[in-house]
Image (spheres, rainbow, N blue to C red):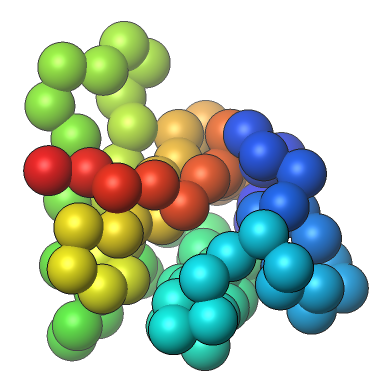
Length: 92
């Protein structure tokens, strides 16, 4: 379950569908990943085709990524079955 976002614009997209702060070409794919992240009980559930689920290097605590499009990823931390500090960012 998603417990928190790093950026208000990402929280608005997920909670209300207001996507003013997210590029239009990323809306649908980002929402699919956020829905999957919210439903996941364990990290392996996120290893779905097209998501390219992976741990990000060099982060403490560990952050994970779900590929959206090009360099864009939904990134998050995971603690006791919950996603924390969820964001949409360019990661490469």
